Image (cartoon, rainbow, N blue to C red; front, side, top):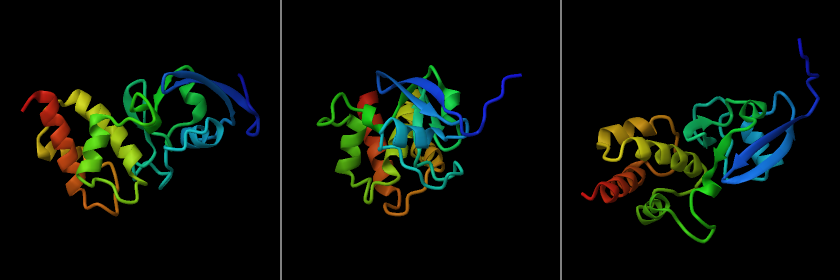
Length: 165
């Protein structure tokens, strides 16, 4: 059986926002900490560290995952997308980001990256969601500032534009 000392570092190779990246992680390092402190992807925020608030949500191989609930060594070889990788360049916004701005769907911005990542997967799978479906998806995210109204309106706008409604 292979054993690793708790303080040993293990190389982790990922594709982060389309770029091959590598760093060292201890076996117990959360993916959120690996992204922030090793790979310097600071857009992934750490809130509750229990998978409840959704602030640390990233896309792993296209699926929304709480980065505080998975170890960095578990994603070796996988494709990770963070909020920094949503738009084509740092000075551009995706339609979803622009709609969040337009509808004042963010205030302090702490929860916003995780919500944007969940919405990205959600809209890919539900191109014409109902408001009830949008609100159900948002139950996995805690936002203390917005009251969710602007977030819901932004998502509805993007969905309507995509479906041509």
